[in-house]
Image 1 (cartoon, rainbow, N blue to C red):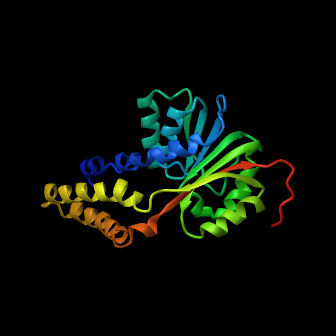
Image 2 (image 1 turned 180 degrees about the vertical axis):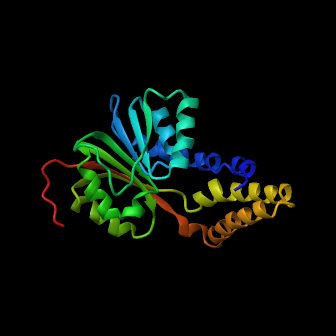
Image 3 (image 1 turned 90 degrees about the vertical axis):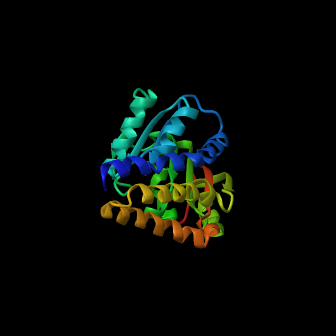
Length: 230
């Protein structure tokens, strides 16, 4: 991707429009003094930085994509969070922190990589007793996922769906406006136009059925001494 184009697209600024839902989910947790938070699949860290703003805790963001972690590291420095936020390269399938390391585990858009039930079961050991797991996942199989939560040893504190058209209104629609402007700006650059076409194809897919891209926040608490059946 041409460097100038990559800087201009900057999808994070549109993703930040959804931070109000990250804040809403965090406010459903009890107040914790300096919680230790693991952000799984943090990407470039839009929710990670928001968590640093709304908490006074220590946050570790993990992801496999080093280029996205590089963006997060720049944000950490720019926001003045070097003493509280750390980005680490780590696969969702190989998380190697000691048991009961975190007060909160946060995962927005990443649990689908490993599977909802597997994520709940494997990540539970990382939580302190009575610690909290917050998942932001697509809306598919909602009732089935709600049933899995107690079976995996958690108490469901709350859950909420984003407005049906939230991803379209808050993210893809403004992105489409920018893509149209960039196609004019880069009209003589075939490589850039090819990249912009890929973005437009993604946007067109969502536009056909915006309500099909709904998502849900699940706010859970790890239970103590629960005998769960696999």
